[in-house]
Image (cartoon, rainbow, N blue to C red; front, side):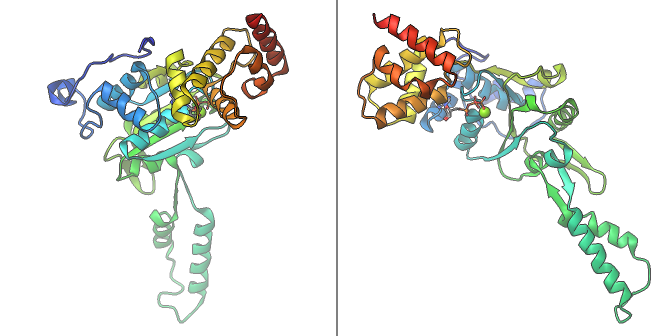
Length: 330
Ligand SMILES: Nc1ncnc2c1ncn2[C@@H]1O[C@H](COP(=O)(O)OP(=O)(O)OP(=O)(O)O)[C@@H](O)[C@H]1O
Ligand SMILES: [Mg+2]
């Protein structure tokens, strides 16, 4: 494919062997490699409906070999979240998702104690202690009780801890990481640097097999240098014409090759306009589905004007695009 590569690794068909051996790279052993080659990653992703270019496949391959998280940036709707989901599916891993938002804190990202259950346990103990027939009643048993209420049974595991403790293969998706505050970003950095979590009452939990980690960002704010340094960087831009046509054909099986090609061309031309919100891949797919539902077999610039509201979400964009399509046809 002619698309420019957005990452390293190119198409090298690197297998196992010394080149892929983490010890030879001076890295700690983190389990057998998940992938055999960059083209293999691309092929296996395509087999489950995710069309990657060489750059995307290269970064996924390297992330596994170097045991590094991937920071995925790029415009909305270009397949950032889907990449993590598809890698999970491709590798038969459980997807654990941490959806980021403003105000997300340690108790929702890592773990918290189940206070309600702890309280009930304490109350039950008080009732038992007040009952003279119960053996040991009246003696202070706070130490015992404390050990009990700060045990596994009272722990609420949140996505980061869940990913670290998982015994089975896991892909951790930290979605829209640019929405969290700096303190939570620092927590993420700590967890992703060590792949371990220290719980004062229980001890340190270490990952037995490092999860593959994807962090996505819409770039609403700059992430810290430290977090970026820890990650491999992947920019996913709008796909080129060939890849977008293939994405349409893969995701909308009922469409003809001709219509998929027309859709991809028109969307591409709209993206060259100065729009407030250029159409994303998800909107291309919505539009393709709309045309199939309406029984349209072929579309030109004039025909496209009637369904522009599926592709564009601002009236000013729709007006501008309609004008442009009209002049393209005349
Ligand atoms: N390369 C691709 N191959 C197959 N489908 C794709 C590809 N890229 C995008 N899609 C489809 O486009 C849609 C949007 O993808 P996704 O939700 O991953 O975008 P995103 O980049 O995470 O967007 P946002 O920034 O809004 O969260 C999904 O339905 C996905 O299936
Ligand atoms: Mg997303």
